Image (cartoon, rainbow, N blue to C red; front, side, top):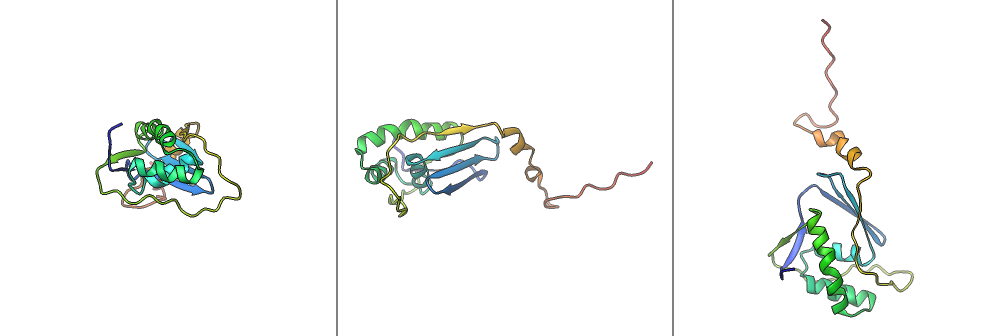
Amino acid sequence: MPTLSGFSAAHAEIAHERVEDEVIVINLRTGAYFSLIGAAADAWDLLLTRTALDDVAAAIAGRYRVEVATVRTDLEPFVRSLVDEGLLVATDATPTAAALADQAPAVEPTYRPPMLEKYDDMEELLLLDPIHEVDEAGWPVVAAEPADG
């Protein structure tokens, strides 16, 4: 993977929410949703702040008390999968300093290589959502009464 300054969400239709140690990401264009747990969730948070990959690895290594080289090696395929799924794009914007939010875990976190878990079982339902069909009239739009003929 080329050395880049950082990454950003691929487009405005990437929705994400962190709930404790998990980030749920939905690509509203495709209807696929993803689960990022532990180090993957931490990496997502840092990558979205345009933090350079080496700094992401260092921050995660510090949190999980593992070698930076191990995390860096594990991050490359993870980030590649985020880019391949259309969730992130590389940017050469000025990176920010890596800092993980102070989330005091109840127990010492266990490091597992970051993984992207993809779910597409609700893809059709998400794409059928009428909010995708919004125009100047707004949403929801009440259908006009059919003309009697």
